[in-house]
Image (cartoon, rainbow, N blue to C red; front, side, top):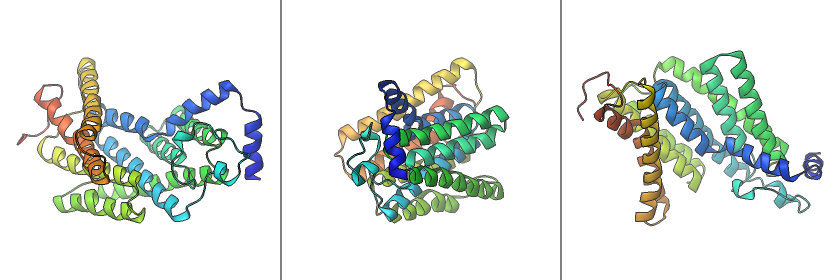
Length: 291
């Protein structure tokens, strides 16, 4: 039945739909959500930004763990009648769909943040269309998309209950070490230290450790004038791009270097960039800074 469904989608393919769904599927790519979450953290709400970052990164790591556990092949590997599109967006195993899981986690969490009917409808549509794009491109089985969607929602729901009990993600240095290093290492280890999991895990470590330092010693305010917000975003995103490419250029491409690169990116987002914002008067601070 799943095979028949994908073959039917293949029959109705057109150049326009191919292009449309190839672009739509990028709405489930982690880079898209990294940019959005970063802007939320810098310009809207630090608490929602860091919680959203935790939700998305944990979903990415757990998605890799589950894929490595099931080791399910992609449809086009299982049956050569299936002709996939945009295959470069489908590395690794098939079950569950990472694009769908990340999309469902992001849109479900933000719908809980905003709590508006129109946004909830938008969130449902965005999640479903990303999931459908993975089927149209013949990169996943329907069960992959369904499991990804459910996992994304369930993990966010569990995290939100934890957040409400803790009040804030980080209280102390020891809890920071637990959240930022022990938990990510355990989860990444379950994947067999798969490359993608290592990158996301070290990014999460950098985000959380940087958030602890920023909260304790800087406490920058997110609100600012429109001009300052634009400068913050441009400067901050430029920093992410430079770190991502510079370290890769200078040092050899190894798993350890990738881990360092993504850890520094996380620290840039939650600590270094906010410190620069305060120093250059792009943001005010709530507490006396030791930096």
